[in-house]
Amino acid sequence: MVDWVQIQGSLTAISAGSRTNVWGVNSAGNIYRYSGNDGSPWAQVSGGLTDIGAAADGTVWGVNSNGNIYRYSGDRGSTNWTQISGGLTRISAGSRTNVWGVNSAGNIYRYSGNDGSPWAQVSGGLTDIGAAADGTAWGVNSNGNIYRYSGDRGSTNWTQISGALTRISAGSRTNVWGVNSAGNIYRYSGNDADPWIRIPGALTDIGAAADGTVWGVNSNGNIYRYIGDGQG
Image (tube, rainbow, N blue to C red; front, side, top):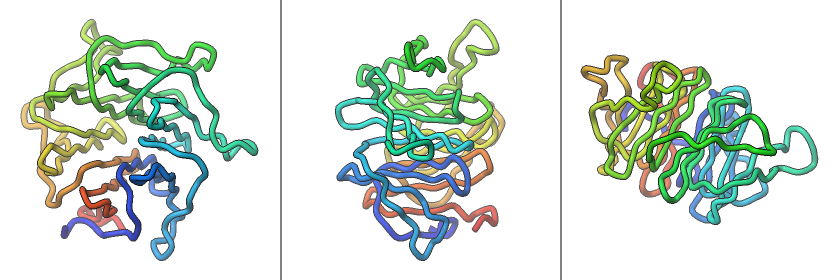
């Protein structure tokens, strides 16, 4: 994987909010936060999650194997995670206010900003979702179809974009990445008519950040950071 540098450790899911806010979970549900030092890259954080979403502003959300939803609060008090009502299987955080998730039935939810009534359902059906710092959201469904959220721009909530992916991550309107069922990696071109540029390598999950940072994990749990455009 010429465009990627391997970082020691083992993870099954990963999310990058920025160069310094990278989180992941492993097959046992253990949670790790990137230390900023490739020599000793991961600091374990207490708790157990199956998916995690890290945002550019430091916000982190996660879900566990029971679908319980948590927001990281370890930077604000003695409790690392605050449970938020609801049930989700995948979650993505672009910022403190742009948090999206999907449940086991494929229903789509957007965080309301109010923990007392946290989730507003959005029409459609997805299996994975990526929320960006600038409000952008992308998703994929069980057939691999790709959609970009357009509910803030018109009457149609989702605009289908050609291609097929199983995982997707949006750092910003222009930094969108995904992987397909074969592990092939794609980067959004910025042109809906020819939307995907294939990037060498093979991954099963990917995390794209607002600042251009991209991390991924493969089927063996190996962890990689993208360096193809000169990033370190």
